[in-house]
Length: 204
Image (cartoon, rainbow, N blue to C red; front, side):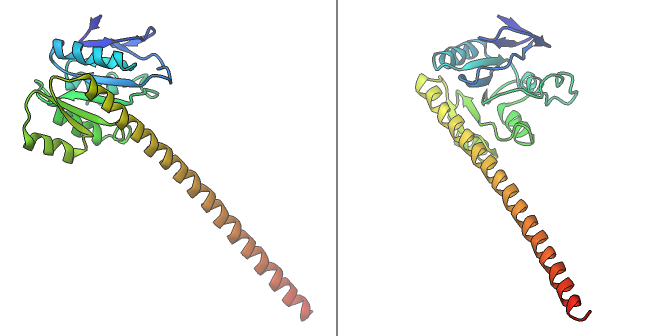
């Protein structure tokens, strides 16, 4: 059921400004689908549902930014701190804000820049494709979207999880190395103090 241009599937709980904020099931990935065409939104929702994804569908780039709490007015940012979105798929040609402009906004966000963004379009324009890929899009899908396209999206989400885990491991290793360096520095200082104390004792 649509409300304020938003369609949420599978979730049943509190909503803020028409957006469903239920904590997602860890077993299912959450995809934010953005398309001004109702028919295309229904198609992508259906394909994602078949692939066992949870879907929040919005009808514009502006609504997508509101859902993510990135709109300029910040009117919908309350309650979105723990928002889990695994992938964003958006149409390129939309009124008000294009998919390319939405992509740029997401990649400028420190919170959401690591989320894979896939662009859809009914036109196979190489300049448009290159432009989106250079800006950080994971893929460019020519409509109509097929089930094989949706299944490929999971590879991007898996790759992202791998990068995040590696980053976390790297951060943990950096912390451990810093702790080791601090301990080594303290040990060196202590050894120096003992040496000076012993040296002074020789001349006492």
